[in-house]
Amino acid sequence: MRIATWNINSIRARIDRLTAWLARSDVDVVAIQETKIPDEKFPTERFTELGYQVAHHGTNQWNGVAVLSRVGLDDVQVGIPGLPTWGDPAVSEARSVSALCSGVRMWSLYVPNGRAIGDPHYDYKLQWLAAVRDYAAKQLVDQPDAQIAFCGDFNIAPTDDDIWSVDYYRNSTHVTPPERQAFSALVDAGFTDVVRPFTPGPGVYTYWDYTQLSFQKRRGMRIDFALASPALAGRVTGALIDREERKGKLPSDHAPVIVELED
Image 1 (tube, rainbow, N blue to C red):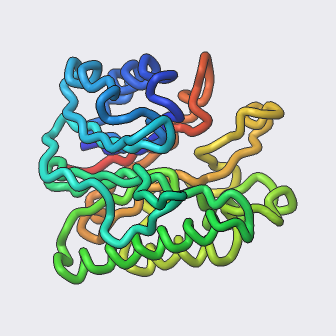
Image 2 (cartoon, helix red, strand yellow; image 1 turned 30 degrees about the vertical axis):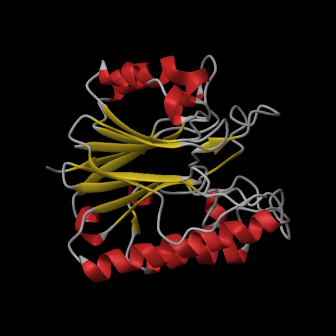
């Protein structure tokens, strides 16, 4: 079984790339972020034609998350309990959705960006991550053998090896101690970064900005992850970052991340 996560950065702009990639990659379940489309306009039929069921959560042209599965899609859950709201008026943003796919609780998460240190969005980001951590820890208390994957764009580079330049990001979000501590808290709750052992070393990224030839110059960040519960982590046999999808015409600024599971 193959699961994956990909910040697609607009389903409208990249529907053809996504469907072609699904055929090429032979992925069974994929978590998608930044669909940027409301539920009623999501192109579900393009995926059902390929044998995938769809759980999508989107309310407007911002954010939006989905789970696509060809191995079953049951017990869809929209939103993680306890997540903070944002905006005026305050709303629950479309940043989390999950479904049970062949025994795996697959979460698609799009963690808030944070914008800038000191910005209210930065505090919102930390509160959002704390709610995910509390929910994740409770799941393992209630069901220690549960197979759970928190997949998505975390908008955090956990270590200095996950950024191309420490100096460049010194006064930026994504690398501050509170953000990294929030990521570590989720790991400490029992969820393992199952991709890193198969993609070691500095210079291994999942995101490259569109500007200043960042991809060509290898100026990226590793901010997309699959964090697995102990029972699921024990099934992992391999993982890769598909950099080919960052190339060519109209790519997303993120690359897909794929995890191999033994049946």
